[in-house]
Amino acid sequence: MAQTIRKLPFDATAKQLAPGVLEVSTLIAMGGLVGLVAIGALAAADATVRRQQTP
Image (cartoon, rainbow, N blue to C red; front, side):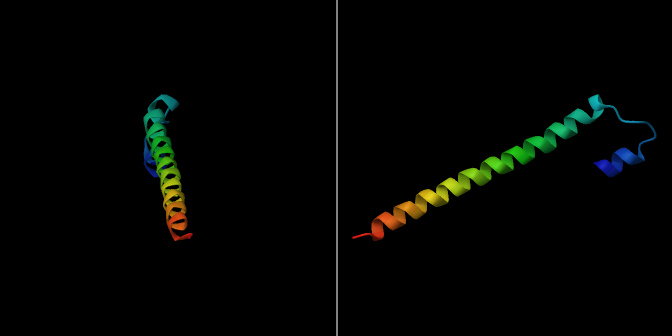
């Protein structure tokens, strides 16, 4: 995105860049959320396995 903006014949305004910035920040936030859910699921699965192995 940055390379495309540099090649434009005019200066891009914040209003023009806002949708792209929003998209990138949304994808980063969603990735973080998915990572946290995965860590939680892994911890729950590990706890279940440990509970089953304990006599």
